[in-house]
Length: 73
Image 1: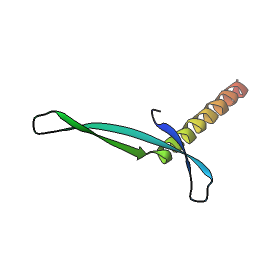
Image 2: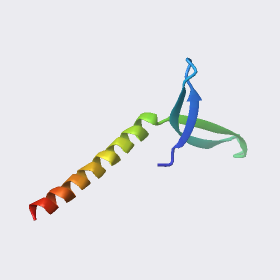
Image 3: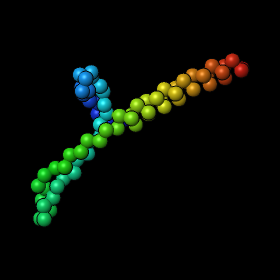
């Protein structure tokens, strides 16, 4: 996961972790020279948390299958 974890404070003051992907693009002028940089942060918190849940589920499944296989032998 290349997303960056950031801590923010909600309106009520409680801290919250969010995950952001950052993208950068040069802004070129009519001569092709870079005149600036466009920076964008995309909130991917839901995707990162879903991926972590999936990884945990797969780990649990693998542990179950290992125990079940051992017991069947």
